[in-house]
Length: 200
Ligand code: GDP
Image (cartoon, rainbow, N blue to C red; front, side, top):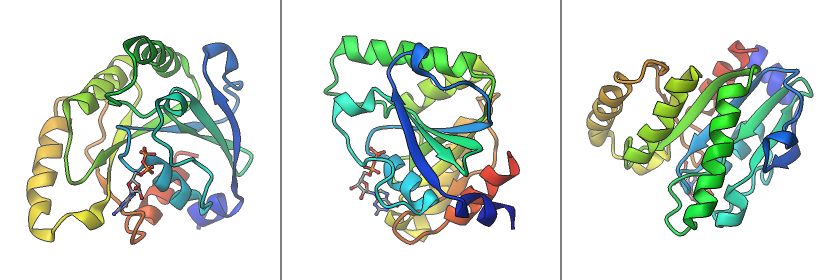
């Protein structure tokens, strides 16, 4: 099937970008991943691509400023946006990457969809809503991916889903479909791969 074929061709790190001038040409379709620091973004990208250390699971403020580009099957980009909500980052640093993020989201013709990662234990937080508002403004369609699903009890799931759906209803760029994932159990990873493959 399409997703298997796409992801079997492999993913590689291309470059980390710190300024708009460093962006690779927008010559192929790309999807990006956003989320709070520690949401499990690096782990998810590694699980998606089957590469254990492709995206670095690192939460240091220095590394989180970069937009990391990965090639997928040589014909697409997976884009790892800087993790946000890092309390210890200096204001000037936060402002710099917010400007870069905004410029990237508003100007990237080849960006097909953003995946906003949300920790299933915490639901949508105000900082998540900030990035969602930015995506609304930039008219970038986005889909919410709940991470660490293995950490929540089945009994707590309906409440989580209701909270998330309620928040998403306010965002015009949001897809209502949620993807519940766990990098620990592998749940939802195939669904996410299939979703990305449909965008190709
Ligand atoms: P990032 O800052 O968003 O890139 O987050 P990381 O990928 O570095 O993950 C943060 C922490 O959450 C690490 O300790 C991971 O091992 C853990 N983690 C990531 N995904 C999962 C998951 O699906 N389930 C569980 N239980 N832990 C996870």
